Image (cartoon, rainbow, N blue to C red; front, side, top):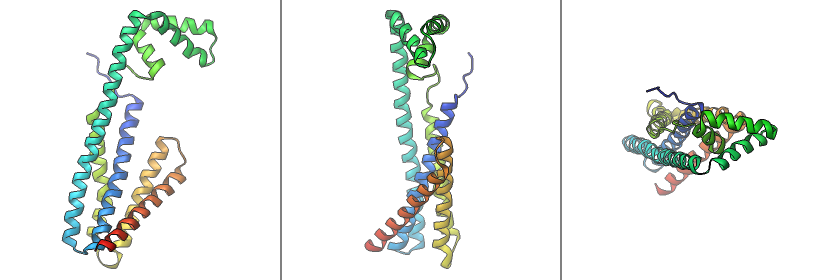
Amino acid sequence: MKKQTMTIDEKLNSVRAGVLGSNDGILTVVGVLFSVSAASGSSFALLIASLANLISGAFSMASGEYASVSSQSDSEKVVVQEEKILLKKDFKNQKAAVKEFYIEKGISPETSAEIANELLARKPLETVLSVKYDIALGHYMNPWQAAGSSLISFTIGGLFPLLTMILVKGAWQFPATIFATMLAMALTGMISAKLSDGLVIKAILRNIIIGLLTIFIHYFIGRILG
């Protein structure tokens, strides 16, 4: 059997899941760090709460990504079965759909008809899936890969503020943790912007502001409850 390689879209989706996981890990853990610090000030309570939050958050993120990607993969497989049936029962309309696709691309009706005939003669199912749904036959999103990417990235993201808070002592503890959080958020903002061809500076600033708001809100809540 021919081994299938990952498509560019599959790789990008896996990386996007990792970026989102890192973002969630950073914000979730730093929120606990500042709320617990403000409420109790106990180093032991801070460590236990942060570790518990990091572990539970990572597995929660992974399970959510697994469920989401599994659902998407199942939907794509259903579409494949439906298109197989339509190719047998309604080939004329399938051919018309392929022809219309190329006409909308700016190709003449005559040439579009020739392209449709040739593609449907060679790879009918692959053609209609690509034209109608932008699906590559056999290349479904891997839920385990997405879950693993989220699990690892959430953990790595959460370790940025956690290790900084643990390793840095004294007056520099909170400023260093805030700086580490801003640096990590800036990095995930840059990566997400690069992947989506967005505005890098805007994405970085947006992520930094979100990180600062997360710290402020959790610290404020911790002070009130403490």
